[in-house]
Length: 360
Image 1 (cartoon, rainbow, N blue to C red):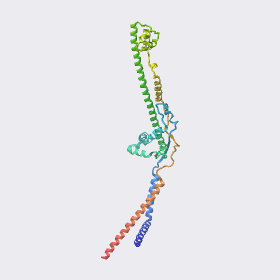
Image 2 (image 1 turned 135 degrees about the vertical axis):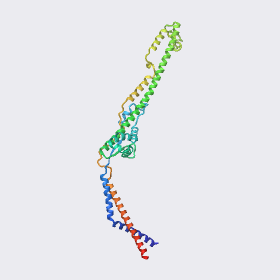
Image 3 (image 1 turned 120 degrees about the vertical axis):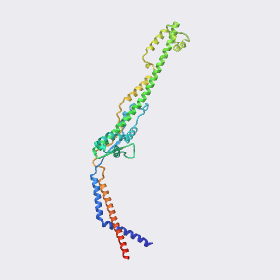
Image 4 (image 1 turned 90 degrees about the vertical axis):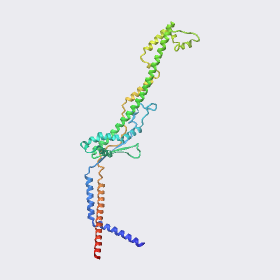
């Protein structure tokens, strides 16, 4: 058993020595292949177009930045106040949305290509652009700082584009929030206006009913020959006088009834005589002002300074050259071993052929 193990170890050692010797025997082949692949990698690294990356860091807005958005919003109001977190979440959602990327691609990226647009389909161009634009959180908190990165062959264009993209999303988010705030105020105003119209119609109907009752009482008063108001005295006068506006209105006399009838028929508006109308009008006017308000808000803050990138992020020249040398060395060693074993096999076949011929 021990002899068997010694034989195996011995064969392994012989094989390792054989491999090392075969590679060393063809060391110039290995060196040549290493240098060739290394030079090719270096040529690719130094002659390929450098890619620069510009990063735009974003932080949540302050309460002062969104203060105008909460105009007319209070705890006792029908309009619920909007918090900083709500505004920032809407902005982050739009920042990562496909529609915003597509809009920027069509309005900014494609026009910048000029004559190169027809050479490639828009789908391939958009895929390239989408890979070069990265939106990611900075740290573990998704509601905190975020970064927008954009890669391009021109450092100036990378800075300009990343700034334009964030500004575009910020303006779009501000418009969205403003429109929502105005729409919410408009809905409340419409509801109050409906109440006002209903109350006015009800007041008008009450006046028409009153006119009809007075006309009927006037007919009775004229038929009874009562021109002046009947004045009662005694214990039952209060009760009778109190009912003069109900079923006994004719007791007020035709002169008083005619004067009141003329006043009711010539009344231009029932608004001053409609209970609760002015309060509703006040609230409706308030929401009308909110709807017409120009909300000047900021939905994010630029954290830091957007500097011009100095060194490219692609290609990584040192890494590419190092990998080229390693791959070239491995490839040269593989070719050297392949030549060695092919030569060895041919020699073995030749020896076998000679041995057979010698026996014959």
